[in-house]
Length: 596
Image 1 (cartoon, rainbow, N blue to C red):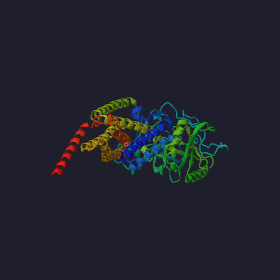
Image 2: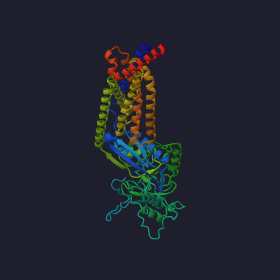
Image 3: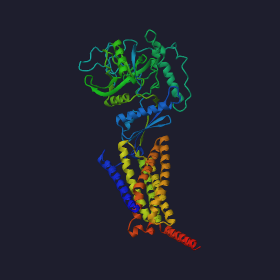
């Protein structure tokens, strides 16, 4: 009865394994892009690596909570723009974004702080930017500069109301719709100009998040451009302080503003805007960008330009409606990372919260801004992105070297198994091949389902897993030898040896999986890839040992084929002789006891 059950069970196990393989490869070939290839990491197919270094206004250490929040927001941005295979990891105070393939340009904008706020533009405190060339006169208020939005010749609000077919918006020409009527070119500050407040805090010592010089620049810019005295109690600008603050701004294209992400929304702000065409004095923020419910980009046929459409949450809608009702004819500045991207005239009260940001955007710029605003602003500002293009040449060379090393290791294992275990060694080779087929299918599917990418570290984990799988076979076969050495036949040794060997196999694989799991949790980057493939291969090793190796050995032990069941052909001849001698000596001992 036991023999019959033992004969039937191996067939069921093998059938179950075959069903698993069939299902996996059916999913590989019949779902997704139908390509049976795993996704490769940046080191195997090349791509872009963007490193963002967090900085704080005082040069202190950013909190871990803020860094994790920034990483999560960047991940949402990645998912939102559909950059597949991208990893966002923390490395100290750095956020490292790796983008495999040719999608690196999209990743360079992922680190924008995207701190959006709405501020009122102070009347008579807007200055056109003077070009740095000494012989070039400053741009007239009625003549647009290259790449800047067209500016009306007077400071009056745009008298053309929106058509009834379009919802009332705050878009009005990219923020230059209210050119100054006076004080457009204030004189440079004289020696009597008040210095920055003496209470300006000194920058704290830097401890890695930002250098002391940058911290000092942030504090100096904040003291001049966010001085509470920029606006008097009567709401009028202090012309001397405003002139000093605007003189400190160069508004150069692509210039990094030290206040980016570090401005105080409760204080006034002097900022550049309109593609660095104008400088503005802005009141404290009256509506934060966190009140944005949704953001989309589109082409405005009426204006003939790309715009960003915003809708607010309930509280934001109420605040925006109150402001536009009380400030009709005034300018509202949309300030993104201390840059005025649009400062339109409020033509009518906007009660439904649907608003447009205009700024002479290209289609790509409008979409990027929309995506960034949709998925939230970062709690920290970051130093300029360090984008590095990674070539796959070095990675492929390393992969080739790794595969050669793995191939040599497999060959050594095969030779050892064939020499030491004979037919059992053939079963080992077959089990390893089936294990590889299982691992490969899982890697392909994980790449489709969760975006897992195979990198060099993951390949290293797979190679090391070969040893773990082979170790399980060795444990089982050596336990068989122990049973035969005690005098049992090969057929009776298989079930008994398996019961004892599987405890050791389970304990060994449990330790390996636990180590891989802990390493995956506490590690970052490539080490996580190594831990993932090691842990996954360890689990699949148990599947192969339980559903393939043991059933095949059981089938061989019950086979009526004399060649297959011969212990000599299984590498068990020597231990069988020892077992036979031990059994004979035991029988002789028992006979002598009876005679005595």
